[in-house]
Length: 433
Image (cartoon, rainbow, N blue to C red; front, side, top):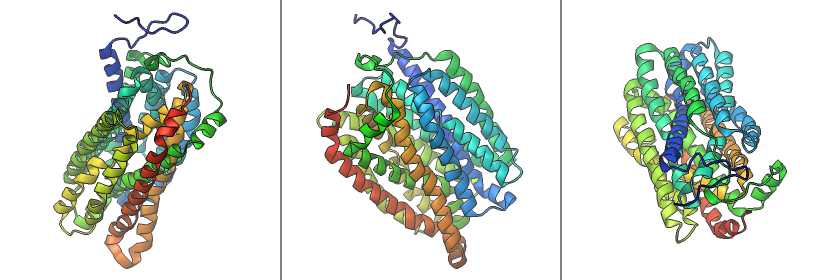
């Protein structure tokens, strides 16, 4: 039997057993699902909130976009820096407790400002979720299976979307949007205790038998990433893909309610299956296939999300042009499955380009750009354009705002992902130890 990896002080590897590794991956994936349940819930509830609080599409776009994203990314980098030095498990536990509490408090909002501050609180809490989790996963899974593990973790996005749409849709229909926030927020506080008391902090560098360096100055991490052409193109490609994905997930419910007069219960079920279950299959298989194809050529980590982006494009156009609600939903299935194929692949490549004590920070830098452009600008610009078009197009203003912006963003994304692939092998070969 192989000797268990140990730190210089003789600490025994807490993840020596395979079942412990997969338990940790499962728990972290559930945490990520809670992250997106709390985030996605607002999308299915926003038409009811808009009517009660008399909000415009620009205000709704700000709630789901910049108001959330600016605090999410601003706190993400210092928290990631903390995670590269401190106990990542404890950071994740505190983060989920905070964002779940703020989600529950959203149900008590009596006006736009109160709801805005509650969403800011959710954003601050969620900033502490992913970068520490990415770093933990890369420490317990080896390079050959890292994209698969990170892709499995990334299915939390889609399971969160699934339960966010499903629970939010039916809870709103029967009990109202305030109850939906309360019901979804409270279980996350329990999950914070599960993380704190059942997960162990892994040994840094464990999966690669590498010696942990001293903490790396943030400016050095930024310089290293900026010097890699593959990272620059990959990050912009991922951000534009996220622009299309977040705009779709945040506005599709409102589009279907306004243009096709669907109820939130029925619609939530459809979107849960399409974007939730379908998206989980896509993001996991995207990482799994890329890992297998990358044995022969690492560029498949970029080629695969670029190709799936091309496949999405015609479906993303026609979904907004057809008149039948069910045809529109069926056309949404292909993008719903393929939207997030880029996630596991871009995370794995980002970690492959940097040193051990750079991983959480590198993830945060990737997510800073991804969320400013994707989560921040995407939903907000769709809302602004919808308000601009409303005087001439009426109820269909949202339909055409999505049609003009979302396919264009995905096309631009594909270009940068192909460009990233051109530089990938050279940049990985020059990665620091």
